[in-house]
Structure formats: structure tokens, C-alpha cells
Amino acid sequence: MKLPNNYGCVYKMAGKRRRPYAVRTKTGEHDNGTPTYKYLGYFEKSADAYTFLAKYNEGLVTPDNRLKNSILFRQVFDEWITEHERYKDVGKQAHASYTLAFTQLKELHDKIFCMLRVDDLQAQIDKLENMSESTIQKPITLLHFMYKYALKKEYVDKDYSQFIIRVSAREKQQMHKAFSHSEIIKLWKDKSEDAKRILIFIYTGFRATELLEIKKENVHLKEAYMVGGKKTDAGKDRVVPIHKKILPLVKEFYKSSDTYLFEENGSPITYMHFKDYHMIPLMERLNMKHTLHDTRHTCASLMKEYDCDNLYRKLIMGHHISDLTDRVYTHVEIARLVLEINKVRI
Image (cartoon, rainbow, N blue to C red):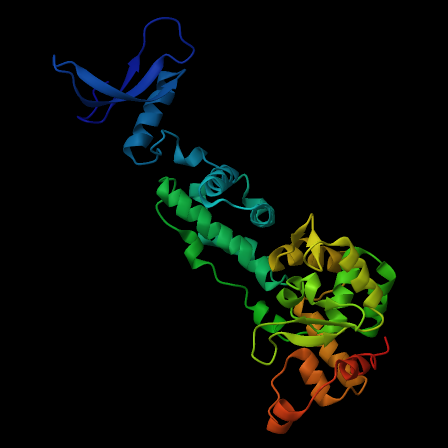
């Protein structure tokens, strides 16, 4: 079979071989004028070898001599995460987070990567409509990383992940919903560690990262208060009273941890990890639909419901106090903050 110049060829090698048909291309010549070759692959049948050679010339073969349409989504993930760990020093929590994101894209696992289009990717993200912001964002981020890797390896010619549209329903989720009295009672009855953590969130009003970053040195059990918070000037290093109902829970976590109030295997728990591995599974198990920020909203709502003084409510929540006299000249005793939070009777 006469093939075009510089096309490559199929060469049958001598001897008994399981795959005697080699696909090769000319790369140059030796000093004596004999050609040098690059071998691309070996095949049992000549027809398969010629098919591979044709695909190679159509640009459908990767630099490491694999057919692009043979590489699955799961293979790209395995290659990417291995390289990512090797060069980026990925920790256990980051690895777990990306693995969870990969699991959320399970319908793509056995799909041919180069055959995927934006509709295939979008369909998977749309299924996460009612999930948290980070739960939606993580698989999108993973897809960005995987396509960047695939482009580098020449598995694909285009990054379809850049066209993903974030789920519009997330905007509606910003209207936070407080835990109901019956849901709070259900959390108390559950008695799991995650339920106890969520109750501490609810009765303190801390933002998620604020409470997760609280160190034991800032937890004062005898006086029943913690010091924490960041984000705003009004919220930084504020005094937050510990409600008498959650004091035993705080003592329990305090006793079992080393440095931070909330720890896992001796390490602090990140916001993403807590959401994906603690908050969401707990909500699913108890048949509740809440985000972590709903706990803070619940605290503010309960203090209003039980007529806590507005000034102390703002101080506990870390809200800005517009009245200059209150903000600068009012001396607030910790005992009064504890008194105010204990007005909540649920």
C-alpha cells in the first residue's frame, strides 16, 4: 500500500510476535544514510495498525501514543490528581475534597474525555442546584483543573469547562432560613458529634470559619465565653457568651481536643471539609435543608424572638453599631452578655 510522504508506515516485524505490526514514522537518518524511526505502537492485526496510523495523522493520537478516544474521564482524573499531589504537595483534606467532587461527577466517569461537551458538564452541575455554594463550586473547579491538564497533555483541543454556567438557584439560597424550634429539638435528641457542633454554631452565632478557627486558649469555660471572629471591624476578636445549654457540649469538645475547639485526628477542620463531610451528611440524615450560614441566622432570630437587648444582640453577632455613644462609651460586662444569650429558652 503506497502511503503519502511523511505519513508513516506499518511494518511487519520478523519472528513470532503477539503484535507483529508496528506503526512507525521516520525521524531522520544515520550517518550511513539509513533511516531512523519512532515507533508509535504495536498491533496484532495490520488493519488495526493502519487505523491507528490514520488517526495519528488526523491528530487523534496523544504525544504518548494513545488514541484520544480511548481515554476516559476517570483516567484523566487519576493522572491529574497524581501529578497535582506530586508537584503541589496536596494535603489529606484537599485530596478528600477533590475526591468528593469527582464522586459528584460520577455519571462522567466512564465517558470518553475528548467526546464530552459543555452540555454534558452543565448537566452534572445542574444536579447540584440545591447544594451549598462550596459543594457546587468544587466540581466546577475540579473540571477547570482537569481540562487544563488535558490541554497540556493534548488529550483535547478545547476547554469546555470555561462555559459552565453556575446554578441560578444559588442566588435564592442566599435568603437564609432559620432552624425551626422542632428542628433544634431534633438536633438535641440526635446526640451525634455533628449535631452537637451545629448546636454550638446555633447558640453562638459564629460564622462558620470563625468557630472552626477558635483555639482552646480563647475558650473561657469558667466565665462562659469565647473570643473570636474576624471579617469586619465590629466582629473581630469579639466576646461571644456560651449559652448554659451548650456549655456541657463546649466542655466535651474542649476536653477531647489539643489546640482547636473542633478538631479531627488532631488537626483543625476546614470550612469545606466540615460542610462536605459533617454538615451536609447530617442534614441529609435528619431530613433537613439548611446551610451552615443558617445557624448564624438562627441565632440572630432566636435572640429577637426572646427579646434580647438589641445592643447586646449586635455585639454578640459582631454587627456594626451605628450609635456612637453605644459603640464607644458603653462598657459591656461579660456577665451581661451571658445573661442576654440565656434569655433564649429552647
